[in-house]
Image (cartoon, helix red, strand yellow):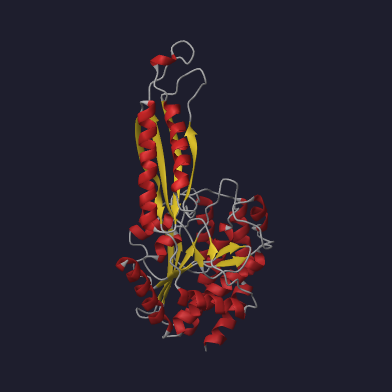
Amino acid sequence: MIEKLKQEAIKEIDSIQDTLVDLSKFIYDNPETGCNEYKAVDKIITVLKSKGLKVKKGICDLDTAFKSEYETCSFGPVIGIMAEYDSLKMGHACGHNIIAASSIGAYLVIAKLMNRENLPGKIVLFGTPAEETYGGKVYLENNGAFNELDVALMAHPSDKNFVKSKSFFRKSIKFTFEGLSAHAAKAPYEGINALDAVVNLFNNVNALRQQLPGTVKIHGIITDGGSEPNIIPAYTAAKIQIRALEQPTLDEITDKVKKCAEGASLAAGTKCDYEEYELTFKGILTNNRLANLFADNLKKLGKEISEEEKMVGSTDMGNVSWSLPAIHPYVAISNEGVKLHTEEFLQAAEPYKSKSGLLTSSKAMAMTCIDLLINNEVLPDIHQEFKMKTQSFIDN
């Protein structure tokens, strides 16, 4: 029965491929940065409602977050599918237009099959804004949006097929320095130069790097360096992101970077303040049992899978993966070697070029959902692995 349903899922996704590509194209042609994805959300909701599905918009007080669910009965697995649709400032060079369309496709087909075959359980589609910046999934998870889920899954476009991924824990901190303005030529000695403080900060961080593990990443920009060269800047600001593969390391390095800022401020004679301007991301905790199901389904679709673990930057899906079993696999849409967040990947994510990868992602997710709905032995194994992994981190 499982294999028969998977074949039906494949046919169903093929039958709506024009709808999915059109959705991908609309989002691609109308790029919107985090928490501004109003056009994308309205378009997605229109598609869902056209298929007779209800949608709750603005969940957890996030305007561009939404939830749609289909339930046949009160028992059975509760499966969450995550959709992303925010863009970078350069456009969809991370392929979130593909993520959205493939997730919607899997959700539509599974809801239809659950209804037709009376499969027990619930499928829930979440629209999760601002993955590139604020971290919509972190906010939704913190506010209990995913509490009822047994598992969560999504698929991300890439240059190769990976089912296991690893990402950095990440903190995003804004540092501000307050000094005193003065005429830079006539009386610079009457001022307190806030620009000196922010430059000192970057110099201190650069000096710190020599004592850091190679897996730690620190990078940032000066967002406010003053207004005119003939005025001693009274206010400057910088945004710095700190990444590490483990939470204790992240916390340790964050404290050191804050001390770099405090020392920089002390040397320049300014006041210093800092705040987290985006939510903290956790590294992905891949559930291998769930990932292997996805891999098997990719193979059934005739796809080759890289055996290596894909190392990525940071994603708010990491936070979800520490709360419940989850996967964040990658599906090829481009030639090997094309990197995310580049002009080349922006071109690869063009809807007609990425159509094959979109449909593969959607089919593999739908097929994995069928495994979860039908095979009663799968979910206990997935939960046991999740419990063992999270407990081992607590014990250590």
